[in-house]
Amino acid sequence: MMKDISRKSKLYQLKNVYQFILTLRRCEQITSMAINQIGIYFSRHLRGLRRLSLNFERCGVNTSQGIKKLTWHVCQLEELTQLSLSFGGRIKNKDLADMSSQIALRLKKLSCFSLNLWSCDNITNKGLEKLASNISKIYIRLKSLSLKFICCESISDEGLISLARKLQKNVTYLSELSLNFGGCKEITNKGAEQLVARLTLNLRNISYLALNFTNCMKISDEGVNKIADHIGKNIRHCSQLYVSFGSCGLITNSGLQRFANHIGNHFYNLQKLALDFSWCEEITNEGISFLIKEMSGSLKRSQYLTLNFSFCKNIDDKGVDNLCIMISNELKNLSHLSLSFMGCFNITNKSLFCLSDSLSNISALTSLSLSFMHCKDINDEGIKYLNSILVEKQNNFHNLLLNFADSSITNQGITMLASKLSETQCNLEQLSLNFSWCLHINGTTKDYIQNILNFIPSVIVS
Image (cartoon, rainbow, N blue to C red; front, side, top):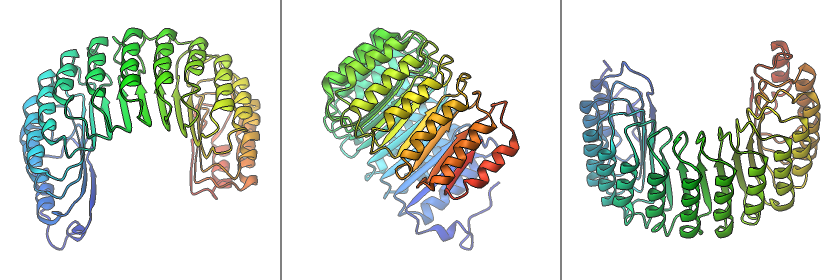
């Protein structure tokens, strides 16, 4: 059992903090009694706390008694403006309803609320309906709302429609909305489309929207088409859009084309765009071409672009080449670029040549993330192409993340890359190099690389 928190304890000395983050993920021996002790400390000594984040995924507190005690103590913190709670496992509909009811009633200054539920099979459609009903009571105060129901497999279309009905008239003041139903395998086109249709209709002040339907395997091209149609028509003023259909295996080039068409025809102020179609194995080079054709105009002002086509096995150098043409010709304002073609087994050094050539035209680029893990046809020649852009942009890059795990790069290639970075004395603040499972690279070389790059504040070589 946790010891009492006395005036002499280190926790007591934190009484003036305004933000507190506590993560006890997978600490299954933590009991409700121990959490109660933490709660007592909060309610007695941190009454002025403004921001609180608590993560109890797969923790012993995930019982009705534990949730009840925790909620009571959190609701004593009446100055809270931001609250993030994460649970997993045994939490039930009634626990969710009681918790959200108390939060809505007691935390009058709350403007940002995040609730993350992981593998909570006891949470059903009724639980979502009650949660939405309680959240709607504080809609005037809420500016940011994030709800995650990851792998909550009892949730289906009925739950999404109930959530949308309860919230649709109460999202007017939201500037940020994030909804994640990843792994809720009973969700189909109907539920996803109704959710987006009802909510986007009243998102008049939205600037950030994130929708995650990863591994909702019943969503097909038809669902993607309708979702994108509602987004395009209803919230064209949104400047940051994040959408994931990863592992939705029914999505094809046609779905990607329709999505790109709706977004491309309506959005002209997108500053940040992130799309995830990983593991959609029916998407090919043609899908990339559709994306470029339909969206190039709407991305001209974009500063952040993230595209994930990992394990889309039919994408090869031609698809990357087409993408590079768009980057070079249209995306002159990009400052952050992240591309993942992990598991696209037919990609070769030619893709790195095209990337290096296109990025040379982007003067604003400061952050670059590339993942070509499992691309075994990439070798030292590809690193040589990449080096050319690193030299050219040596004073620009602040963040560089390269993942070439399980490629054919050798000691010579990684040494050449590190030497070039060291010679340029670039302004990098963060560097991550992943060459795991590259059978021609040994541990001695990795240690050597780590040493010669020690002038960079944050370096990870694996």
